Structure formats: structure tokens, C-alpha cells
Amino acid sequence: MIRLAAAVLFATTLLAAAPPSVAQTPVAASADHAVLLAHPDPRLAANKRLVYDFWREVFEAAHMDLAEKYMLASYIQHNPNVPDGRAAFVSFFSKIRQPKPIEPRVAAPLVAILADGDLVTLVFARELPEPSDATKKYTTTWFDMFRIENGKIAEHWDPAVKR
Image 1 (cartoon, one colour):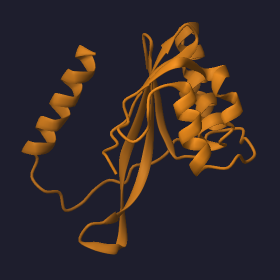
Image 2 (image 1 turned 120 degrees about the vertical axis):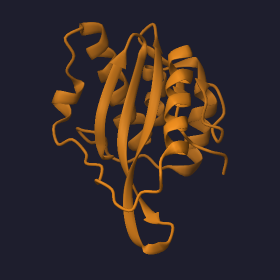
Image 3 (image 1 turned 135 degrees about the horizontal axis):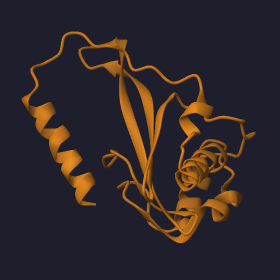
């Protein structure tokens, strides 16, 4: 947790000190998810695969019946819009998503999958409307970080704010 807090503080400090940008290099997704899933440590490769498959099957395809396969019952949620617990997660997303076919790869524009110890982070490209001109778009990044415990997802973080 100290590593995460230090990284967030560092990034926040850099953003606050940075001059306004007038140009940006667009964020690009990776075409090769197999490369993103690879890791020389078999435990970290398995953790990456667990989170990747959870994202495809449960989050994107809304197969909430598979949540138990991936998530601890005591799942901790740090997104302020979604309650703690696997049952609460299933209830929340069952109300806003309908199951659809499970795709062979993550559909969202995936930039990177990082694994360190019991943490796995998915990094995505996001396209948003330009604040000064809603007819234009810009890209940025989004992350979802998961803590793995005994082969299941125990905890989740993302940069979401209250709606």
C-alpha cells in the first residue's frame, strides 16, 4: 500500500506542476495480448491470466454467474460507486449489464498488464471529449488494479470518482 500511495503522490505532484499541454501523443492499445500476458515467473503469469479472464468473462461479457470462479466472497472494492463484496458486485453489475458472448480477448483497448507480487494492473486507453470542444476527442489512460489472494481477486482499485 505504501508503494501505491507514493506512486499516486508522485503522479499528482507531477500533474500539478506541469504546464498546460497543447499537444499530446495519443495513447495506443497493444495488438498482442499474448505478449502482455507473458511473464517469466509462472505465478505472476497466472495472476495476469486470472485478472484478464475475469475482465473478459465477468466484467465485459457480464457473466456474473462466473464471479465466484474469480473473486473472493470478501472482495474489497475501492471504486466509490460499487459496494464491497462479491455478492454486492454481482448485484450491482447485474442491474446495469446483460450477459453477452464471451470474447477470446479483452475488448477494451488494453495498453499493458503489469504484475508485481500479489498485484495485477490493467492499463487501458480511453477516448474522451475535449473539454473546450466536445466535437473533438483526446486519449488518456485508465487503470484497474487487483490484489490476488489464494488464486482469486481479493481487492480492486481504479481512479473512479463518485457519480
